[in-house]
Image 1 (cartoon, rainbow, N blue to C red):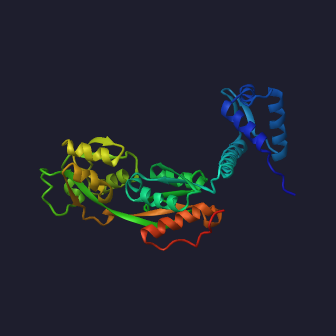
Image 2 (image 1 turned 90 degrees about the vertical axis):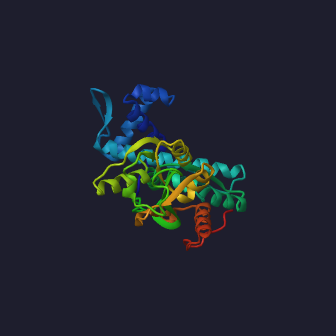
Image 3 (image 1 turned 45 degrees about the horizontal axis):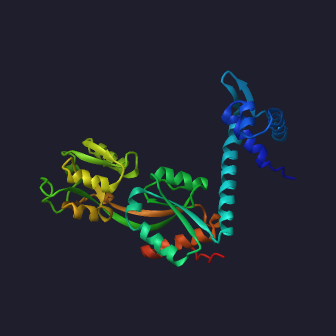
Length: 309
């Protein structure tokens, strides 16, 4: 017969691991130290192996304790999210969906696509946050996000990936720049000029640095910014050119009188994907949103969703 872990005991175990001291963990959880010690001892008897040891820097988990700590954090986090989502039903919300998106996806059609969904399903709540691709994948895998929208070059192994939209990288530069007269450019041609880096550590920057390394060159990044609009303003100020997705950069570039020249490399056409955990783990609201995004992008949606409520 399976023996289940008590969430209260798991929370106390996490507190001891984080505080490295039973007294501080007890104070944090508003308990006496002896009660915490008894809970931990009972937990160790249940698993049949020591979970904590005393070291010079305080109480630390054993190898088994480290494994339990990872699982406990994931389980407690899932329970908190479950409580938050279920609680929303009392306020009339018939579902909630957490969406994490890359800078480019968020700067293009995704907000409008989600707005159309919310206009249709008014009882569903959607939260939308910006994140770099590797963090998006991690959060979806851990269940901290329901949907990730990112460039499909990211490693989404173990997740369900559905095609979404695409964009084309171009070189954004002042109209008087020596390269502005070209109809198209190779990425190598841009490397002789100062550049503006966008979203340091993100997928786009990583891809451009890899492409320059394959050419035996390095990017001449004069300044780095976190967003696409900021990059356009820096280019307009004459501080460098920028490689940006045309679909996202076009409004700001046109307003500033900037030239936009497409790149010729095959990798300059980027395809985005909607990534989720396996379909059986998705809520009805999440399945509905994935289906809606696919329909807006004109791609084949995943299996038919079920109306919430």
